[in-house]
Image (cartoon, rainbow, N blue to C red; front, side, top):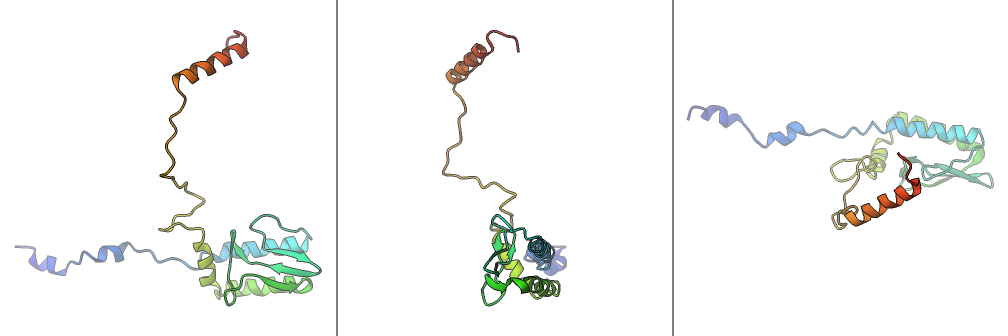
Length: 162
């Protein structure tokens, strides 16, 4: 066999290592910082946020702050994702959190929060429709139903050309 020396150096198991792409844990910083800036702007304008992406609410001069990446809470400290901050210190707290994010101290926590938006294999939930195998495919209209519909439409038009 002429290729014996060459084949001795080849390792087929390295194909997986060649195609592996390491996850970039820093890519979640920018959207999280943008969300923090939006929360600060809303707070400064006395404009309470709405929806499931809302990071804060205020009652009795106390802010209930839940940092989120998208709609997923970020567990910042000891598995906690909800914090209570006096309203006068809330802008300072956001500024400090922003500094920590920029320094990369929360990269792993942000990556974990982003994992909630992914299906197995790293496919985003929002971009793909999951097909249900237990639901039968729709057959469409029967010829009788189609004829009845066309007759109803023709009667509505009163014989007018389309």
